[in-house]
Length: 146
Image 1 (tube, one colour):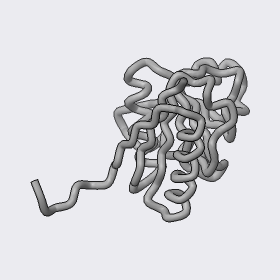
Image 2 (cartoon, one colour; image 1 turned 30 degrees about the vertical axis):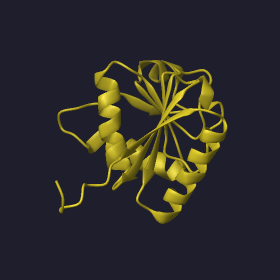
Image 3 (spheres, helix red, strand yellow; image 1 turned 90 degrees about the vertical axis):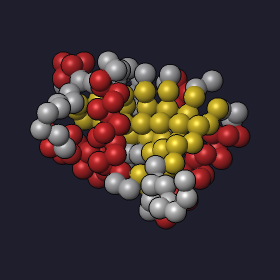
Image 4 (cartoon, helix red, strand yellow; image 1 turned 135 degrees about the vertical axis):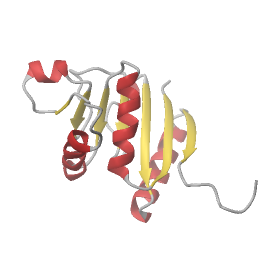
């Protein structure tokens, strides 16, 4: 069964995903990113500009095959069965189709109330299926305390 990580409280969904993809790429891995077309469009633009020192080879799901094969990141509304199945990053509202065929799933949840509620539903769905769930809270620690 796939290990599913939830990254909760992402303050800026697209910016956080760029940093996450930089880590994935640095490890020599490939990722499919699923989500709403407008979010994927924002991510596509951000991947070109978020760092002057890094380039993350990426493309949209409908890119020509040579570009798809040269890319480390595929931006797609739903998982693409014809592309690499290492990491699935879900930025969307629902559980992606065929998610269980991936080695690792990272579900990123922003601070938006609606997106948080949708994230809780996805958590419950994965839990009912018996998947191991790992929670990463991205919220800064409170100022008071240790």
